[in-house]
View (tube, rainbow, N blue to C red):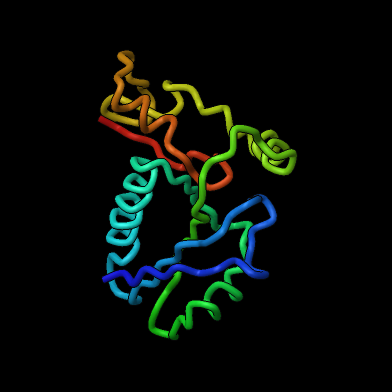
Length: 151
C-alpha cells in the first residue's frame, strides 16, 4: 500500500521545474511487485489531477532523492520511487525544459517498425494501431523507449 505525502518544495526542487508550490511523493514498502502496484496507483492520481486542471509530471533523475526521502521520513523498509510537482501548467516552456527535451529528443520516438513485431523480433508488424501508437508515445526515462512488443 502506498503512502502519499504532500511536500513543500523549500530547497527540494528539481532544476527543470519552475513555479511549483508542492510535490506529491509516494512511499511504498519494499515488497515483491511494489513497482507495478505503485505505478498503477500513482498514474491514477496523475490522471485525476489532470482531469481537474492540475498539472503534474513524472520526475526521477533530476531531483535530489536523498533530500526528498529525508523530508518524507522514508524508512529503510520503504522506497520512494517518484515525486511529482503539483501546480497549474504554464502556457510557455522554460529554456531549461526546452534544452533538456532537445537533448533527450523528447519530441521524437522510435519508428513503429523498430518497436512492434509479429511472432519474433525479426518481423515488424505491418499494421499500425491506436493502442500500439499510444505505447510508442508513452514516456520513458530520457526517452529511451526500452520496450519491444512481439505479437
